[in-house]
Amino acid sequence: MRLVSCLVLTATVVAGCSRSDLVPDEGASSPEQQQVVAVVEQLFHGIATQDTILLGRLLDRDAQLVSVREVNGEPSWTRRNRADFLSGIGTNEVEMVERMWDPEVRVDGDIASLWAPYDFHVDGEFSHCGYDAFHLVRKRGVWLITAITYTVRTEGCHDALPPPPDGE
Image 1: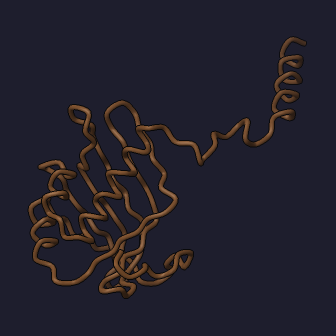
Image 2 (image 1 turned 90 degrees about the vertical axis):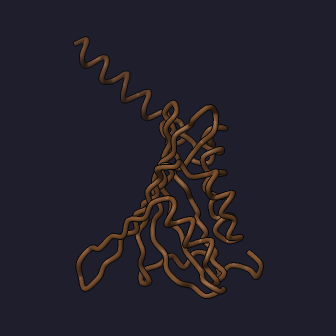
């Protein structure tokens, strides 16, 4: 009888709750989550402005970047280290704009991850889209990117956002 009473009580409580009582508000974010998003946005700004000094401050010295795409029907990935990434950005002669939206951020102590859909434009023209996955660690109060893994595709992309405005 006690079990039945507990089940009835639980069902009554759950039935009286709205969805927002059971699921955290997705719009709310902690200061730590906002800091993680800000670091990724700074990375995008550094790419757009080819600011390798800024990018170097955001990336851990052992950071790895892995892109995954389909080639001839098979998954293929390319791995780059921090030095290769910075060199590529610093010598690039095209305008690059990367944008993300709806980031999902998780923080536990001094580690964090950010997962978000993105699109990428070169010289104002759409290039590709996919999902970004960033991993960060906090060292002496500063969030550093330790790894970036992202998919690259040109079809099935998100049409939710317009092309970037000039100068972005």
